[in-house]
Image 1 (cartoon, rainbow, N blue to C red):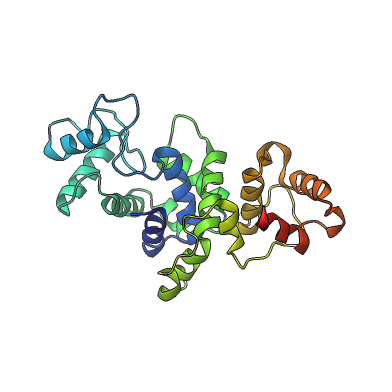
Image 2 (cartoon, helix red, strand yellow):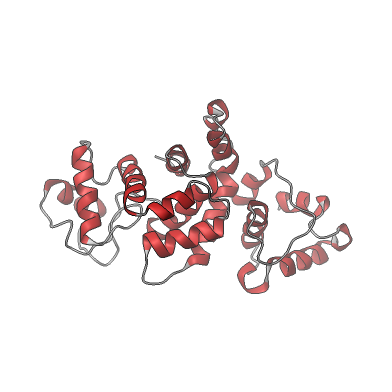
Length: 255
């Protein structure tokens, strides 16, 4: 499966496109969206060897405390349920589709409040934060990194995911620019930015803009979105264009 395939499965499973990308951002920080990956430094086996040993029962997969898979499942009961689910559907524990379906099953059954939120979520940062704190529960809540990764995914795949959510299968099955750069993918979006940009905005449009500035080397989290925009406009001679005007947006997409 590709990143788009994983995100598509999450949307078709009931998440909004925003929520799916927030989950994808968490997966990026956990495993780089790689299913058959074992936590680095916790086993001497290669990923392939570890996966084969888990499938065969040669290791105590549930109790070895090795984070595994897209979500780096670690706690024994969750790993045991993942292994049992994979065996019940006749696939490898490292199969991406199986792990995505297990993630959906786990959310619906074990995290009903979070799942209900993800079926309507339109706030990418808020969704990334809740997934991090309620579902992933890492040792360090690096929420900003997860939200930024989710923003990048939404910039790249948002139009296709929106089409899937709207039931437009023909558009959804024709992803454009799936492997393009961040700025190039954003250029394919028909979305326009609002005329006013405020620090703390959590709209998809503000997410697009933040990710573009990160791609250009700005520290948006430290300096603030508005300050980055004003600095960019000043350096490019677009300061008279207004805050996030059409000329500024067009030039950003060409960077």
